[in-house]
Image (spheres, rainbow, N blue to C red):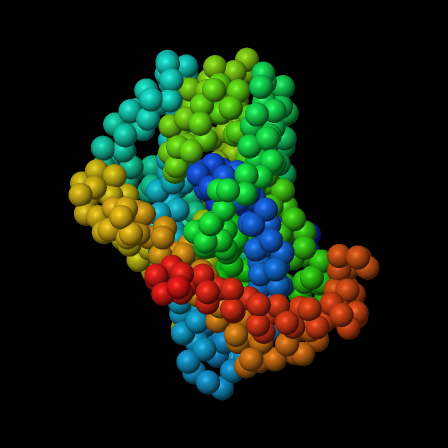
Length: 464
Ligand code: PFF
């Protein structure tokens, strides 16, 4: 494949939709609401937005740029830009992360499809309260065939899209599904806002309680900023490698980050208005959308439709992200070993599918296999999630910032970012014609990002 021309996006708009499709995923709709719910709502939101602005957006620009400069997968990109072979391992870490994330991601993706079908069946109408829904969820998950079956279905859909290539697969799916996702979300938010006592949900999300903030909050917010923007493992680099030099990366990154944050907030509004208006607490953890929401949604005036729409939303979000995760390892095999897309996809899918099985079984057959991190027992599923969000992605981000800041050079990055025209003077790359913006960006990339990520690591391992 490397001898033929590389596929590319038909337009910058379609690149933005695909990249936003990668960013907007389970992180926004499944994870963000429960992490915010467990960590003080608005107080978490503010720290998370600061992480997005100071670390997320600069690294998003750099990842896309490194991909576009080299037109390569993450391993190939570092190989091309540096004479020191060690940097390739940062790209390699991305390939490992793509295995890890997809393993637990496709289990949750499978749940989303299964729940959409249950919603169509009208199952949730029979649930008295979230407790009953929780028991249903646990019962379903105790059946290994059920979890594995839906995980396989989700995985096959992902593989089918990847096999179709950049334009016919990745681009086409995001072009149709992302507008649909936004439409469904608006509908859910609209309904939520009209529920009695919905203002309590809004207050929870927008009125900060600073007493809830501690060092752990920063760790979670930073890890989540990476996860939600698909940073640190080369997904944005791989998508950037299909982008034309005529397009403005700065403008595209700003839109992607804005859409991602906006959609997480909308998902928070849609979920917290329903939860608070029914008098429940949002601190239910990962089970929030699967335990708490189904019975509450089913009781709403348009309950039947709302439940279907919610789980359709979750499935769409999961699929447009999962394809970007698998594409990283497929692009790696295509570029580095000159495999055809079909061959690369077959090999990687089988490998990732096998790696994911223990994750799917950690709710039943392997539920006793746990590891204590701190005082909490982590199942295999939890460990994969923890490794990806709290270690691999921030570590990848740390090295990308170090690479650009101290090896490749911020000046080269600025030159690359100035390439391409968006005709947008406020949010486009012309802001880099301003010397202050250039110095702030350089300072963030060279010092602030690596330092903050490093501190978070020290804290995580109990060293500070
Ligand atoms: N950004 C996705 C989400 O929020 O669900 C998850 C993700 C996709 C992480 C792609 C990393 C990645 F490379």
